[in-house]
Length: 167
Image 1 (cartoon, one colour):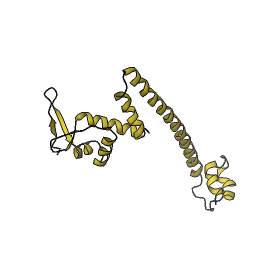
Image 2 (image 1 turned 90 degrees about the horizontal axis):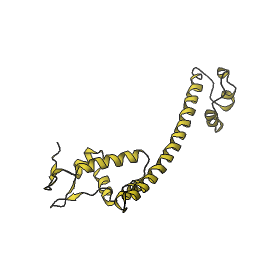
Image 3 (image 1 turned 135 degrees about the vertical axis):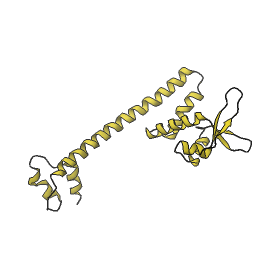
Image 4 (image 1 turned 180 degrees about the vertical axis):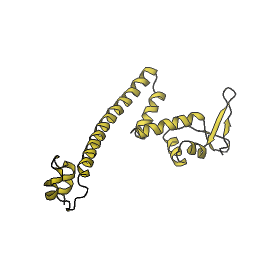
């Protein structure tokens, strides 16, 4: 059971989480959270005994950081993403910088999707070809697989043949 504290502010009292609690809530480690603090991605407050305390907003921010990481953003790109909002003089400049970061990543994701799509097609083709190999009692080799009569309707799978050429 989490024993969350309160960040006391007369205008806006809110829950506060110790570093271990925040780590559990966000599937992170305390080491990661300390590293993010060093990178200035997280800004905890400290209580009188020096313990780090994190607000509810830290949970949302960490979940977003994890989404960005899973989407292919490096920590440096994530830092640049957040810094664009904190270090620019105008919203227009911050938005412009952020749009550039996001558009660059969208192009990288599109290229990755293209590569994954090709790999998906190649692997499906290989499985289709290999299904007719079930029950074959010949040793797989470039010669025997290239001239196999069980695949008369299909050309040999090029990826599979490239593997056999190395034997």
